[in-house]
Length: 78
Image (cartoon, rainbow, N blue to C red; front, side, top):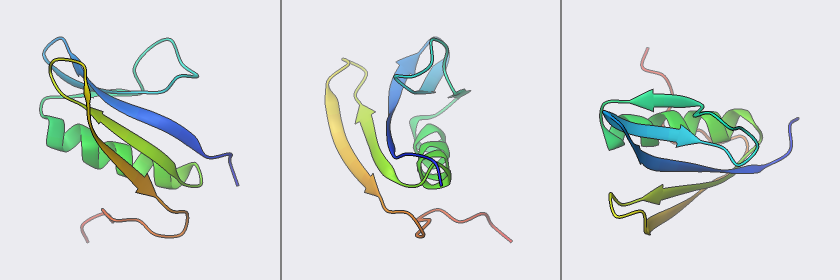
């Protein structure tokens, strides 16, 4: 199991980025904040749980979401 990590949903040119402090480039870029949050949930879940910090357009943190390992709040649609 990978170590828990904090990831961020931040404003990005043309949309919203999912970023990680351990990477220099975005993990992924999405057209909407909602899509970036959903991708962030999946990514944090896959790395063994952690925190997802959602930023407003101003850059301020507007939400902190804890994702526990073993529970995916946004499972893939089947």
